[in-house]
Image (cartoon, rainbow, N blue to C red; front, side):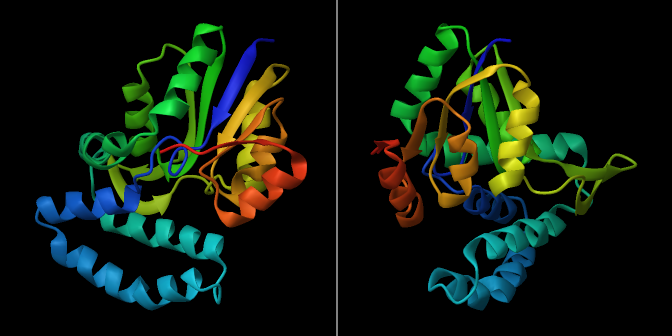
Length: 221
């Protein structure tokens, strides 16, 4: 069996945003114009999602899918370099130390950490390595590779909401999910699987759920 602890990445383990890190990476590596065109095409939908006219999660999924096209042609080593850069310069600098400390405590008690995130696989893997824990499993968004190069598409569906929860459930099998951490309402199905759901700096929707269900709320910096 064994014990497991599941956690989201962006907003939960870090206050940073991978998309910003990718933007800075592209600008620093001679691809600024490509990102500028991408951002301009998504600026109005982003505003509409922010005010609630467009569904936020649907917009985020579309953003992830379209942003992946900026990475078309990248070799595996280039994607890994991007992942390391984004983590080092955006996500790790804004890490939520209190949450990471709790994960380390669970790990010391014998649990395996499951990082379940919509982030691109190279970024999620790079962050997992920074945790410096022996037992970490990553469930993230894989980028499709053909002949050693990224196609700009996904190799599998984005793991959010109930799909994220189902992937965690399948991974742990007969094990116990002793705790789960998330920051937005789409994380709620995953949190509900655990013995101790923790809402980390939750958005308004997750905070409402957490209060109704008496889940722990962690006001991480």
